[in-house]
Length: 154
Image (cartoon, rainbow, N blue to C red; front, side):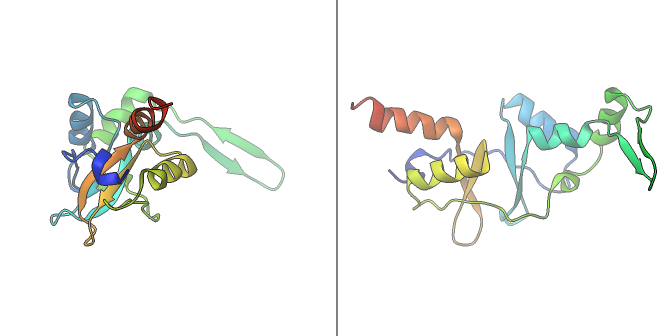
């Protein structure tokens, strides 16, 4: 079975200049846990998950290292304050400079399962030859296809 047979084609996306608040609104209203971030030509810039957002808004501990001393300073920042501060920041603040793992429409389901397992992803973007997003494959999509094509036939 090929990726183009199981992928979600109607993909919600974000743009780097959108605010984190706008991104959260898209994710919550559509009950999704992550979106591809694309440029004005639809080309993939990265993926942002609900986990990326939580890590970004989480109040951080600051550690001071000295040759003789190790001190952890907990700033007086509440979760509410951290969230309010983050909401107007651009989505681009969440993008990491890491290699983006993608699938092509012609990849086999086994390749999707392998990448999802290896990288612990919830979703993988599917791109065309020009790196434009044409779909996504989620863990749930993969499990449903495994069940339908393999388990039901046993």
